[in-house]
Image 1 (cartoon, helix red, strand yellow):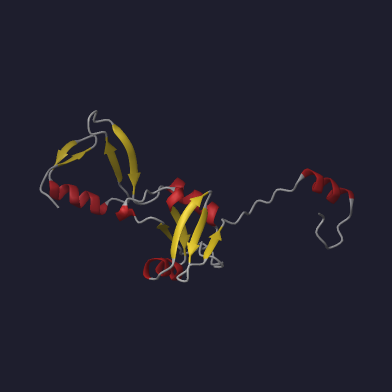
Image 2 (spheres, helix red, strand yellow; image 1 turned 180 degrees about the vertical axis):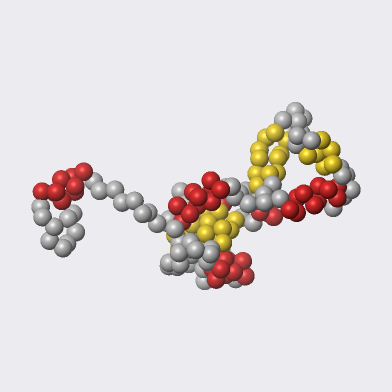
Amino acid sequence: MSQEPALLVGYGPIDADTARRLAAEAPGWDRVMYHPHSGLPMAVDRYRPSAELRRFLRARDERCRFPGCIRALRRQDVDHTVDRAKGGPTCDGNLAHFCRRHHTLKHASAWRVRQVGGGVLEWFSPTGRRYADKPPSVVQFVPSRGLARASAAPYEGGAPF
């Protein structure tokens, strides 16, 4: 908004118009927070998740994270749980996939959500009911005692444990 010059890393100062144009055309940009006294970087954050973070979120979420929704990740939105404009970081503990319907519902209704750790989302309905949505797991681990029984007995259509 100001006409102050910007600092382009590896280049030096650039005028405000050039900085705005570069920022608008960049596929992503990092926000660097510096210590007010030492001038050393304290944290780096970005609005759009990195490719690595998007890959992690796809593996963790597998579907829309609204309780009961089973829509696959194809064409879903990655959304900040705490809005970026309100200081929410771009990290796995503040991002989740939502289909367009539930993304809109999250922002335009009385439904509220928070992340409680481990990828678990805690939803609160307009009536105050609480719903926990745990990330699905594609990998299933079988206790070794169940595996021994399963290999000893032939499969007869039921669960081996």
